[in-house]
Image (cartoon, rainbow, N blue to C red):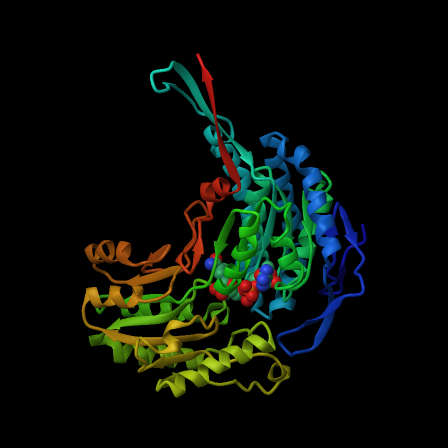
Length: 487
Ligand code: NAD
């Protein structure tokens, strides 16, 4: 097979029914966010390509869905090994598409993608009672004795649509459990980040799953490949990560065929810092939670509530460190840079005090043609300000004071979103009291983004539907079927 890597650039291709498809006439440019240069072309899947991918996935279902656990687990392990064997290529491709610091791609994105496949290979063995059956002797309404047992069936053809911020990590976070549970897949990565998904298709091709088990299409979302896929009548489930507004659009078309959805959506994540917190740990943790990957992680903190007695010191120290940071990547695109800068302007119009950042940095090199914005710390806005309520998805956080525990919880919960939250305190009782009251799917205490892949991951309110992680993903990607035998 001819590999799609040319130097460090990847030539994105669709992968349908076990073949890499030559691009049709419709293509769009791939832009390097570091300097704005056009570095390649991405094929745009038309309806016919999407139909072919879904049909291929349907045709593969019996072979893959009916394969024994050890076959599926073995394939997942070989995919993990295959990604690991080409680790540097994957890192290069992720860095080329996103502009993120190489350290981040090499320590988080690619290792986690490998880990996703291994974790689900392991989990398949860890749940025999689910993968096989549970026998429960019982009786039914006085009409006779019965033996009930439950088996889990794959859902069928699963559409996976993923965003650009952690491209391979978030794609494989769904592909691995979907395949583990015996489904076949049609995946569409973000139009901004097609490269590592293409490399993954190459690895899967070499591993040799039944033809059509995994298919990859590229293209845009609304009115294009993403919508063709999620509106497809022969798709049995949709697993989506992206903006809440896109979730609304997908849910609308999914309603037509009552297609089940798993949604990981946007956030406006709060941090609560109590005066009894370890000050250094809280500042350093908040710096990391607000500015990792230039704030372009769904779990990043954009609202910080600090107990009034330490608010001024906290704001000053966070601002000093944000202003001093230099090793950060760009926004993913010119359009996203413009969106983030529009919030920087809006914050000032709304009356914010800009403690750090607020503009475009000047590096004196090619990055000045790229899509960079400064890490920005704000204070002084009311809770009703749009800057405090709307997801920016950039390196921005607003720091407001609070006086009581109840007020802190109320402020944290006053949001249409509920993905993740962070609580900083040295008081164990307070931590246990406050954490369950915060309306979010994940609450970290004295840490941020510390992940165990077996734990439930997901949001409440506009941040999503359902949970991923460990058993939770396997539950979404399969249907329990009860079998009742009269005895
Ligand atoms: P996005 O919603 O713009 O795009 C995500 C994917 O959906 C892309 O592949 C896109 O092509 C596709 N898409 C867009 N419109 C579509 C439509 N109408 N029908 C079908 N597909 C469509 O999101 P993004 O800008 O790529 O990512 C950033 C967003 O993702 C942020 O809101 C962030 O909070 C969220 N996010 C959430 C999580 C989480 O786990 N909750 C993780 C990462 C990112």
